[in-house]
Image (cartoon, rainbow, N blue to C red; front, side):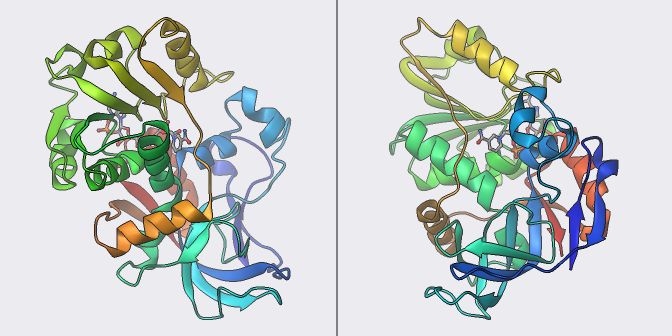
Length: 323
Ligand SMILES: NC(=O)c1ccc[n+]([C@@H]2O[C@H](COP(=O)([O-])OP(=O)(O)OC[C@H]3O[C@@H](n4cnc5c(N)ncnc54)[C@H](OP(=O)(O)O)[C@@H]3O)[C@@H](O)[C@H]2O)c1
């Protein structure tokens, strides 16, 4: 089967399409023929091998795992002997390391669920990492309640476009921050108020928020706290790429240290894959409460271009790969 692999860290040029052995499902696994995948900043970091602080996990000198990608949607081709919830022919979506390939094997109990009938493979593949991050950030870390005011800084990318819709589905009053070209997109996703960061400084506004989901990580703590109620929560999701040693973590550490004495709560978290939350997303998609926004589509053979575009950090929604 064809798969995206790399044997060293570096620019997207290290990515190659290779013929590798088709996996065989274990007793508790499904073999999925991948029809579409999507890429996330975490995949970009795993290709570049940055920040260096992550190297013990990624591989000190070369990648521990040759295969790349996480989000997929496809059709079950075969199931192991102990699999009870899926059958060959079922359309599914989920997350699994190595998703940028023609096939993946996924354990039945892990983050794989039926694809909603109202979604294409491309739309479903756009969902897992970005939408799980938005869901867990708003609902679990932020404890977002109906009627609360939430600010989403970085509302137009993969995580942000899901966050606006999920916050609305949870009943919040949503303000999204994005650049001029994305104002209409963010408004169309249901944001009650949109701030164009190229014209307006949201930290100088009179508006106050109960929760800020900071996807962009573009502002300091002293700036953010001006618009946060004394009992508000700041959820840090992402930050600029930063230096090679600490990468986005340098911003996270600075904000954590600066906010130590504040009455406001500051939380950084890493989203986790689990079936229960994939089911929540499946239901939101089926109900039409959340619709993936797809920016560009690439073929598997154009994977380096897809990663170059991802690395620019200005996607309008998700970048999808057809397999
Ligand atoms: N903690 C976790 O578990 C987790 C999970 C997923 C992602 N992340 C992190 O979250 C971040 C975003 O991920 P993503 O998938 O949404 O990335 P993405 O799809 O590349 O989107 C990035 C978005 O950020 C916006 N942006 C850039 N600079 C901005 C600024 N100064 N103010 C407001 N918005 C700005 C861009 O919009 P413009 O073009 O309009 O500037 C773009 O739409 C990354 O740092 C990623 O590593 C963390």
